[in-house]
Each structure stands twice: as structure tokens, then as C-alpha cells.
Image (tube, rainbow, N blue to C red; front, side, top):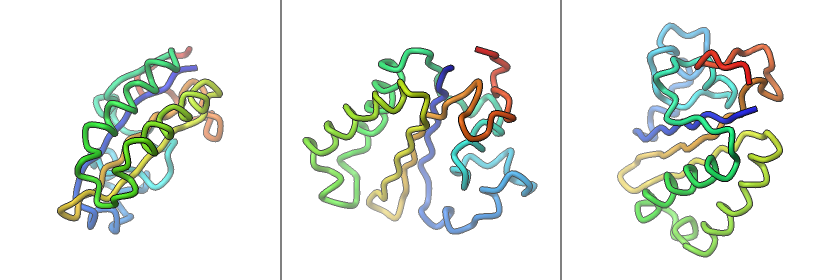
Length: 138
């Protein structure tokens, strides 16, 4: 079991177009917008993977770094609260250890949206039929 990391930062308006977010849509494979179903990240090209970790601590650290790097631009004051954010990042380690996906999404200033995802792989709990995008079988 390992996790792949994915991020997407783009116009919040792109999230309203659900066609490119579905695997059967012709733009799905080339669109970096977050898919409607988390496991479908694994159907995207391997070049979209921003990191792969077998170690839960390293995966959680990457997730935390990605979130903290954009936290000052979170549209919600509550989401910018550093104590609340640190607590949420500490708790995600347990979820990664259990082989779960960890998905976060935040609206940013300027009508932007940030998605940070750790997707479990080989196999995915809900979609074991989806192969690893990197070809790994561990």
C-alpha cells in the first residue's frame, strides 16, 4: 500500500464544469482539475502524480506542507486559523496509516480553489480494479 499525492489550484468556476471531471469525458485525461471521485485521480496520467509515499509520516508531511503553503490565501478566516489547521494535519496521519484517502479543498481569495489529495493505491479500498498509475504493485 502506498499513497500518491495530487494538487490542483485553479478557478473555482472550473469545478462547476463536471464533464471534464468524469472519466468518460474526452478531456478527462488531459484536465488537471480534481475528479468528482477521489479514486479517479489514479486514472489520470502518471505525470500528474506529485509524489508517492509508502511511509504515512512522509505522506502526511507532504500534505501539510502543501496546505500550509497556501493557508494565508484561504478565503475563510476559520480555515486560516493555524491551530485548527495544525490539528487537522496531525489527525490525517492516522487516516493515511489506515490506507484511507485524504482529501482537502479550500476556496482561496480571487475565486480560486485548492485541492490537495493523498490517494491510496495498490489497491484502492473502494476501487481495487484501478491499477496504479505508476505501474507499482506494492
